[in-house]
Length: 394
Image 1 (cartoon, rainbow, N blue to C red):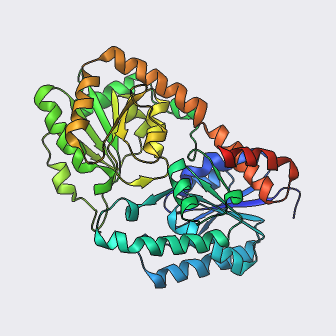
Image 2: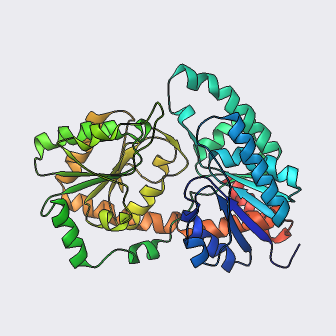
Image 3: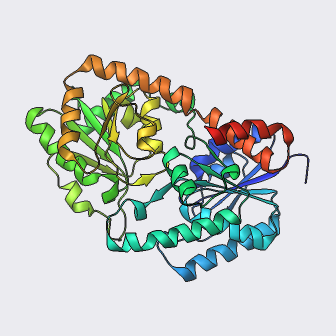
């Protein structure tokens, strides 16, 4: 091994979101690289090698085998010292590919338990034993498993899917609070954005999510209609891309035609849209690890309303920096929105607490330090063992 261990983060979707984390790890003394199915020029701009491989979100054994084969070839060609899998499919595939390629060390992060544990359908119930089998096998092939919330960790421990001494809890993927706040445009641009959306002098309730049922899109639409009967000038803004196909996808037409919600689709100016908001809502009932959008909204000092679900409830302290509502309950969601829209002083106090909470508990610096500690521990550095032991007991 070189003096600087060579670390790869392997993910699904937009791995570019982890560039700030990779930069922090590089500053901590690691060589870094990333692999994923979606390329971005941001990697080259930050001097971070990127390696592409194919991946499908759907269950497809043939495509999954191809993903494992491509990853094993990449690992064999570049010989990283440690590969770190994030997201659901990579957490299952990467350990197997790493074994094939002879990678010395494999770490994985469980970023939630997904639709299988969010749906009540017969198919989801039948797939849960398969999920447990695959996760148990992947854990046996890995050196260490990281969880983003305690509920997921408790599930894995209670079902004996992992060894208690080869896991720890790290709260989410982290957010560089100062950098995110610095990315907000100046006030003249924000004022122009308010005019463009027609929300001048109106309280704005925003939500950011893909158009999937488990994200709580339907509950957001229904709550908006309820709230606007009491507060007619309230503006509800939904930001997020459409999803092509699948049983949980919500048609764009039904969302775009809503008289109560402004649907913007995919946007790159998320920070600005949050900056013109008065309240952020995420009525998700998806088993997420720790939703990044809640951290982003917190970084801009917004009060939050989300569901009492794993991951979501780790960001919101009920009644302190926002409210937790039952999943799939648009009536309670609407009542919480009305309460906060009717109390500007309460919103301001909760927003300040959101900012302090995300800074003290979920800052990117803290996550990078925790990951670096895990890496050094599994790579055999004795000085890292005490820190990792504390996180195992957290």
